Image (cartoon, rainbow, N blue to C red):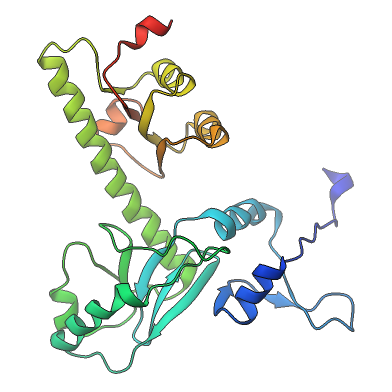
Length: 264
């Protein structure tokens, strides 16, 4: 909108956020600039129109990943991170194995409320940058090496890996659904492909878990707005070649077997 050109919205940090940044070791990614008030001791980070919404969502609600560089262990998203532990001289496989045992105990939350300390899982842990070849060659399946060192690029790798993990989980649900169909089950526990059935399950509080492609924006918005107990897994990027793609980018599990056609 031409009338809005040159305007900006300034959102001040809360006291809790200021404390987390000044004393809690939390970092916000972006170029810090001085405000117009010359007497101010503060700073601002400016996000352009295209990045503002994604930055806001990232800073407040994005799932963090866990990564190690040659010098530290971090918990972070694209725009926010915290150093949890310093690393010095990890060059051998034995030293690396010892370090791995120290990772989980050192992890810290990057939530503003300091809740939800992350836990290593099948897709969220990386070693980044340059590491000894012997260490890289012996990595377990749940650890990925990335040459990236910038937080934004590391988070891109995380999102890609997370999506592949979610697609595999969605495909497993679809396999279970197909098995039920072959058994002649008339009351499904799992349903896929039908947005109408997904809407019925959501509105009647039948949905327990859902894997949804990011393209289903309205459905995702409605689920988040409901604020219920549905485990929502949003899958980003390409899904071609998967059962999840073949079934329209939606599969969900219900709390119990039910014939959804009875709900109209």
